[in-house]
Structures are given as C-alpha cells and as structure tokens.
Length: 390
Image 1: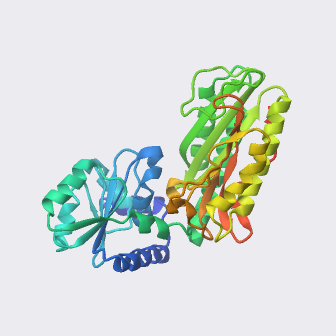
Image 2: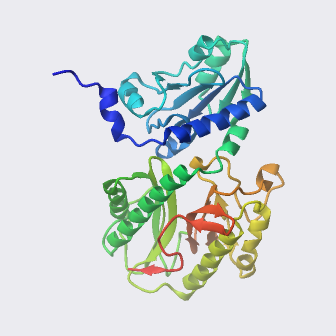
Image 3: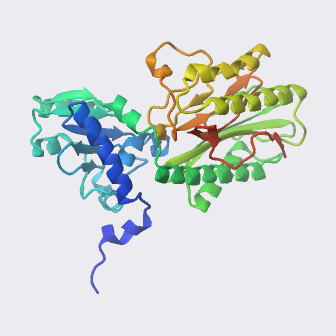
C-alpha cells in the first residue's frame, strides 16, 4: 500500500475560497502595489483574539493560527510565500495554504533576497515583532521599507459575494452560541458554566469560537454595564441580568452579537426604558449606514439618547476581519480617518454601550451588519427588540 501524503490527504477537509476569488484579491493588491511603487509586501498577523488578528495573512493565504504569528511575502512579480512559525506546523500549513511555497520560521528576508529585491521597496502590513523587523533591516539594508497597511486595509473593506456568504455562516454560529447560553441560564449555575455552554454549541455546530465577554449583576443594585472579558465562578441568582458579547466564525469570518438576559423576573422600569432607547439607537445607526455616509453624520443618531440623560460610548466599529472600517463615535475626532465614507458591502459591528454611569446600570446591544444602499442590514437572525427573561 502506498503511503498517504499528509498534505493532499487533509487538504479537502479545509474550506477555501474559489480560485477566482483569490485571483480577484491578488489583482487588487498588485494594482495598489504598482500605484504605490511597492515591489514586495510583507504581511503579518498575530494569533490574538483566537487568530482574528491574523486576518490579513488569512485573506491572502488561507492560513491562520492561534499560537504563532504568520507572515506572507507577496511580490509584485513572482510567487508568494507563507512563513508559518514553528516547524511542527508544516503539515497543517501546507494543508490549508493556497500557496505552493510554505516555509517555517520568521526569516522573511531570505525570500526577499531570493527575489532579487535587496534594493527594492518593501511594503509592510501589520504589527511586526521587533526582532523580525530588525532582522529585515539588518539583512536587507539596501531595501526601502515603507508602511502599506493603510491602502491594504482600504482595499479589503468591500466584501465579495463569497466573503459575505462566509460571514453569514459566522453570524449563524454566533446566534447558535447565544441561544445555547440563554438555554443554560438559571439560578444556581455559574458564569463559567453558561460560557461553556455557548462555546460547546458553536464548536458542535461546526464553527469557531472567537471570544465571549460575559458578566452578570443584580438588576436591583447593578455594578456592570459592559461584560467582563473573562467569566467567573459567580453564581447566577434570580433578579440578575446577564450581559454578553459573542463572536463566532466560519473559518475566521466572524459574526458578533451583543445581548442581555433577565433572570427569573421582569427587568425594572429603568432597564426597560434604557432598553427602548438602545434598540432605537441601533436601528438609527443602521439606517444611516449607507454607501457614502460619513461617520460624523451617522453619529447624530445618539442625540435623543444623550438628551434623555444617558451616556453612550462607541456606537459602531469594524472588526479585525473587516479592513480599516471607520468607527462611529458620539464625538467624532477631527482626524481624516474618522471622516471616510462608508462603502457598499463592508461590514460594521453596531454595538452601542448605553448606561447611566460607568460600570453601573447599562446595556450592550448590537449585531454585525452589512452596509447596503438601504442602510445596515443585520447578518444575524436573532431578534433585536426582545428583552429576554428566563
């Protein structure tokens, strides 16, 4: 019996985009490389947030990893190369990467020398480890190293049809995690246990669990507006509110949903009133998320909430997988970054945090939405208006 090849044997089990989709991306990148005088890109990402911060590497190569940084060397002329970290990852990197040239380590300078670009212009994308950047400058001293993250992020903002399909799958997994969490809530269980229920449901359904912020507090005497970033062993009691933010993905194309649940009794009137304002704020922000809209104009939706005496922090952001989408803030900074118009088919996380005072009575509500000519359209199927009571 012939020995199985570990690369070709496992490759069909890992989803990837079509060849046409990758060629579309590479054409966009090379068009911008030419326009900006860049001979070669070096793109990096970190395994933070369950590898969501490696989105740029994944977008080019289909490789992603939760334990080590990755690097893509992408020349204007020639074949791209993936550097994947530890040598023990070689089989899995080959199984998942769409490039033929897959190498361990971080010594990206070697590929630049092979390409004959020791005096070329090298564009960098991502936050580089100091030792990698120092080595690049030391080993290729004649190269001109320039930042390229700005234009690279811009070209990634508009989602293709294939990307939107994957994002819808990610949103479905986030919905599944939320429903599992809600089903697990009852007096006597701990925050950690309901967190585990959401995580298990996402993985069991075939998704990836990116993160969940989760916390609970008594509604009669609240000490939480924004959920904590790690669950505790606090026991859920009747009269609590559980506040959560769940991000789950299909192959790191993530949906994200923010909701809250009252335990054992109806929420007090102040929570109901804040809920109504927060729901309307989400709707008004989504209504403004049209191609060409400016973030400062969308931010005007916050005015009724502020006039009612509440405070609001960020209203919308772009996720790490979404390129350089500008946020919507109650007060828009003068920096030009915050004045760029929204683009059709980019994704925005609408997630206003409304509260009476920091770390007290507050609510956190929102969905991942798609910018369309009719406004932001949620990728989730979970109702926005409902204040769940279990």
